[in-house]
Image 1 (cartoon, rainbow, N blue to C red):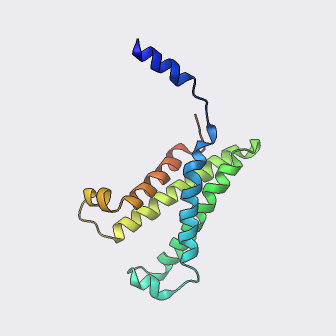
Image 2: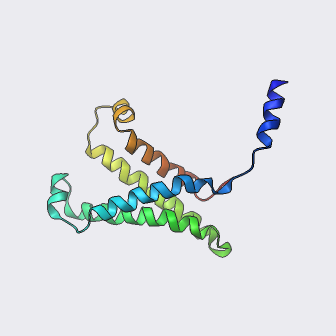
Image 3: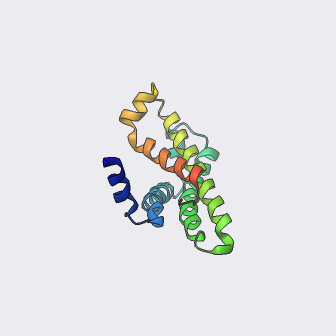
Length: 141
């Protein structure tokens, strides 16, 4: 009885297909901001992290591409003949985000997974956001 009552209440909630923007926009802002904060390019910053210069340049480009790709992928969802491209761009951007954040976590050299979950929760959440878009794309239902 209580189960059917809760189910009936749940069906009365409206659908909000734009809710992915509540994750998409902050995630894109973080990655665009991080990419822009590394400009102008500085060799000493790459050396401080122990990364080759080419990897540091790839990180900057990837962060900017991932952020803008998330935004444009969502916008292209509303253009009928480009829906497929928007979905692909969103999934690609999510995959880039997962790769970048995995690299960030690896560079920090955590002792175990629990250390990441307890003390590096910001990067863990960013990775989960990227994974969401990599696996889900622009599909809302």
